[in-house]
Amino acid sequence: MNNEEVVRKATDAGVLLVTFLYCDNGGVIRGKSSHIYGLANRIDSGIGLTVAMQAMSDNDDLQPIDGMGPKGEIRLVPDPNTFTLLPYAPKRAVMMADMHTLDRKPWAACPRDFLKKQIDRAGKMGLNIQAAFEPEWSLARRDGDGFAPIDESLCFSGVGMTESMEVIDDIVVALDAQGLQVEQYYPELGHGQQELTIGHADALRAADNHIVYRETVRNIARQHDLYASFAPKPFPDQSGNGCHLHISLWDEQAERNLFYDSDGRHGLSQMGYQFIGGVLAHLRGLVALTAPSVNSYRRLIPNSWSSAFVCYGPDNREAAVRIPSGYWGNEMASANLELKPSDSSANPYLALGGLISAGLDGITNNTIPSLDLEIDVDPTTLPDGELKRRGIVNLPRSLDEAVRALEEDVTLMESLGPTLSEAYLAIRRADAKLFSENDQSFEIRRHFNKF
Image (cartoon, rainbow, N blue to C red; front, side, top):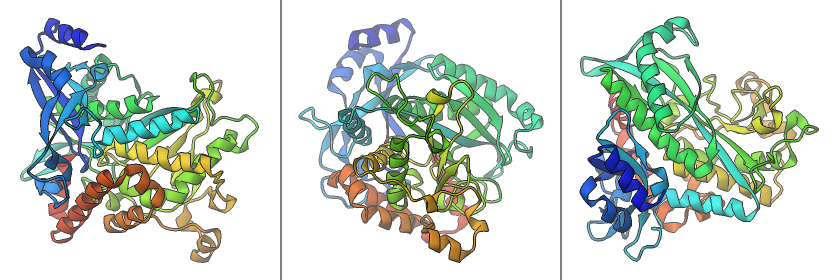
């Protein structure tokens, strides 16, 4: 879609405001809006944004990062191909935005550009990346100064479907109107917990879709006087909300899934195992991008089906990387890998870009994972000596530990680049410090409405 088509479509739909959306280093969706009368110029020139916004930690505390203070400006430049009318807000539309410097070049601290670079890197290797985000989230009502789940139903139960039927149906309609194809829905294990998945897409579109998805769910819930939280652990006594990342690599024509091999172990090709090897080699640092909040580490604990160990396995939901079984009659197309230690407190561009960077490193260096790391049981059922013998180690147990692992990971740090990595690490350290100085109720309250 070109600029003129965007303006015409917005005008014909009666849109008054078009928001240029982005996701910051803290995983918060933010944006600025243009009135329809100035939209044509704003699409070309962008909207001004202070460089400080990529240095904002929780509670909008500006971190002391060179080049990201009160002086300096970038532009939010929208991608016309992402123009979306909002069915839940008829006078509004959105576009995903890139961050550009004043000389019209991608800003080194732009998360969306980071993902684009990893996609380009894969393209130079003849690879087409398909991905999907698989989010879980909690539906709640106001309960005094806090929130309470909308029900106490059991996993996949009909009672849970009944309780959330009206809001879920409206979400499905709204997602479909925005071109996001819903695949499955069910109530999850936690009270009030929902899982509603959408189809895979090219990597950049998949990350864009997750932004649209989060905004849609949150807004539709509010129209039903409910609250939707994507926080990893909004209720300490309930199951956590993951956002599993599914990925597959295809040939340049997107006709052949390069992860599939009918003769391979578990139907997976050598390239698939190389990708796993790269992910496992970098996983302790990678989780600082895929599970990047203090609240994430209330979820990444043993026996929680979120995975707490560096291992992989076929259809093992306690393995960090799951090899899903293929669908009957569609084995080639459905071959993919699932990253379990991931949640929606992550910036989707950074999470997916980091996953791609790690996996491509495995392909480049032929990093085949050891069979000792393949596991078909819950790792916690194995004796400590057995885990040590097989080289199965714990994932970081805190955000502080994950940030240190990321900083020590040369591959991921080089992929992020100095500008983006410096800002990201500073923000995550500031968040870890803030929440270490406050109690659990402060943490839960701050994360519930943030994501």
